[in-house]
Image 1 (cartoon, rainbow, N blue to C red):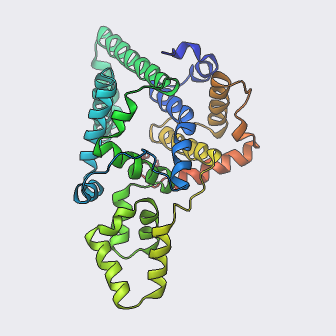
Image 2 (cartoon, rainbow, N blue to C red):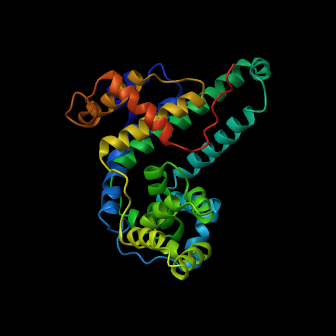
Image 3 (cartoon, rainbow, N blue to C red):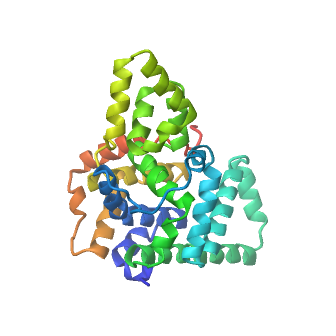
Amino acid sequence: MADIEKMTHFKEWAKDKTFLIRTAALQLALYPKDFHDPLKKLKAGERIEGHIPLPPIDEWLEFYKNHGKVYLGLTNSLIQLDNRLSGIIDFYEGLMFSLASLRHITQLELQEAVNELKSEDKNRIFESLKENFKAIENLIIGDHLEDSEKKQKFISTPEVLFFVRVWAPCFLLYGDYPAYILRKARQGDEEAFEKLLRLDKLLIYEPKMKKIFKKATETKARGRMSLIAKAFRSTPKAKIEIKHIKYFFAGLLSLISIAMGQKLKAVDIHNLFDAVARDTTDELVDPDLIVSPETFEKGIQRARNFWKISIPLPDKK
């Protein structure tokens, strides 16, 4: 398994970054190609997961409403894929719960609580964080560089199939969760309906969508019928060039850093991608992002707008 210490250029970039920023940055800079390859297959109309049979339609459509079930199935499958992930997942969930709890107390209250800790307690917490984030980083790199035979078994569970075929592509292509887009489609938003139908043909069996389709047929609404028919035959419209995925991930990293109150400048994020390129390829810079600083900054701004997910940004003073 690869070691974070061997990624010397990334290590240099990360030396003044917090553990949270460093871990998010590593994941978002390493994974664009891993997402690009299956998305190209999706665009070409191929099944990303191969020929694994899908679960019953009712069970499949239920995943749109029950993200908790998808998440639980995904994490359980990840743990079976590599049992070392169990502690990491528990740690991440606890961390996210703690960060959410911090939104309900003031900075002064937090500082007072920290000041009350004994020095040995502070050191123990710091070492625990350091150990966990070190493990996460090594697992990220190991998974990126290492191909496992367990992956086929991992992807065959219903929840993981939905994540791979709908949830992740929806998030990457449209910047939103499937349930939110489906809600818009159920309310009559034709663009939302078209987006999901291009991605998941089984959506035509969703009760509300069936009614919309039936009504369009009965009223001979040619425009809507044409849109539905074209979406059913087609794949997602969104561009799937790797540079676009890198911009999307760069924008997401920017949002995460803002949410943590540690905003990364565009030049910092550009340097991150260059550092990872130097560590993982023979390139001196990321060949997909050879643009001016101004162009890259505008790309990040567009990508931040693209992500419509609810990241808790700090209150404006």
